[in-house]
Structure formats: structure tokens, C-alpha cells
Image (tube, rainbow, N blue to C red; front, side, top):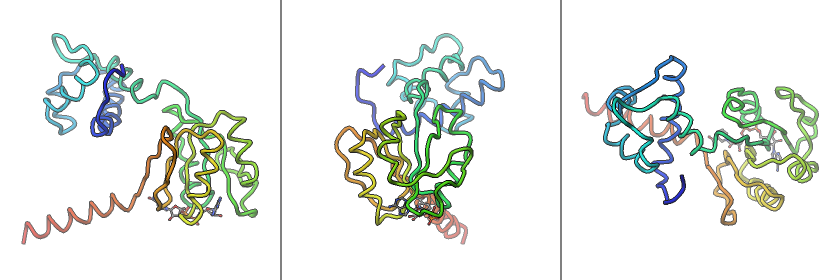
Length: 213
Ligand SMILES: NC(=O)c1ccc[n+]([C@@H]2O[C@H](COP(=O)([O-])OP(=O)(O)OC[C@H]3O[C@@H](n4cnc5c(N)ncnc54)[C@H](O)[C@@H]3O)[C@@H](O)[C@H]2O)c1
């Protein structure tokens, strides 16, 4: 259902609902009320109902939501019912760690290729995928139905590489390089800065210590 524009704040909360519902489904829970979900997730029941109402409410009737149905529908909204092929550019520490993370496949994200500018890394194996030289990037993307590129290279080359990716049909970039990418409309960029999360933690440590003084 895509009739109206859904706020990014709501979209940002969907993966967490999806995760909790997946766990409930695996535990064999068939139905759950918004109050119970609220207790589990520490989100108010009204927030949950408001979020779900953006998508027509997911047919809550009688006692709560059907867990399996809700899990499947939220998965569809997140596009997880489709396969997304991705490549990783930059076979350093971070790129290899992401390539080695098996769970992405469970969600339909398929690790297809890895590229690096350092000739010494070419041919190295990361979970069955061989590192390829950058010269092969463009043809590989075009020939292997790649829609997501993961950028784990230094910021100095990220902009140039992103331009090349876009020119060859990449639809989305998961950007770990510490630089803002300027991409045409219609290309999705998700910036990830692990240190932002750590700084939030640091803020909260400070706030908590000043509260108990
Ligand atoms: N956003 C985050 O949360 C986060 C966290 C850690 C690291 N980083 C950033 O991600 C990048 C990778 O980190 P790392 O620890 O894996 O570094 P790393 O040095 O281990 O790996 C970087 C790799 O990129 C390759 N590379 C450099 N320029 C390239 C180019 N133009 N094309 C293709 N490959 C190229 C290098 O050969 C190297 O193998 C760094 O720039 C770092 O600042 C971001």
C-alpha cells in the first residue's frame, strides 16, 4: 500500500517492529495486542497503532494482530519480499566484516561481488566471493543485476566511485565513507556512521553521571 507519503520516522521504526515480530513468530506466538507489543518494545501502544494506521492498520480485530500476517506485511513494505543483490567496494577491515556477515542473506540481500583498488587484495576470498579489481566494477554491475553498492572506502575516493556506480545503474548506496554523496534524484543513499551511535552513548553516560552526582 503506497497511497500516501509515509514519514521517514515511521519507516525508521519498521525494521524494529519487523525484528520483534520475527522473534514472536519463531516462538510460535500467533496473536499479539498493541498493549503487549508495547510492553515488549517499550513503545507506547498508541504510537504502535498510529504507525500501523499509516498502512491501513493491518486489520486488528478482536484480540490483537495476527503476528505472521503483520510480519509478512511489514516485510513487504520494507521490500524484503524481493531479492536485492549487492556489491562491496573496499575489501578492507569493514568491507570484509560486512561481507562475512551471513544474516543479510536471510533478509534477501545477496552478496555478489567485492572490489578493491589494491592489487594485493584481488583474488582474496570473502565467504566464497573473490575480490575483483576496480576495472571490472562497471561491467559486473551491469551484467549481474546489482542494485545496492556498499561503500567501505576512504572518503577521498567515495564521491568519484559513487558517480561511477550511479552511471552504471546502481539504485542504492549504503555509504560508510565519511562524506556526503551528491547523487541524482531517485538514487537512495543511506549513510551509516557507527561513531554517531557511540557519541550518543557517550552523551547518555555523561547525562547519567551528572544526574547521580
Ligand atoms: N561509517 C562508519 O561507521 C565507519 C566505520 C569504520 C570505518 N569507516 C570508514 O570506512 C572506510 C573503510 O574502513 P576500513 O577500516 O575497512 O579501512 P581499510 O583501510 O581497512 O580498507 C579500505 C579499503 O579500501 C580500498 N580502497 C581505497 N581506495 C579505493 C578506491 N578508490 N576504490 C576501491 N577501493 C579502494 C583500500 O585498498 C582498502 O582495502 C574508511 O574510510 C573508514 O573511515 C566508517
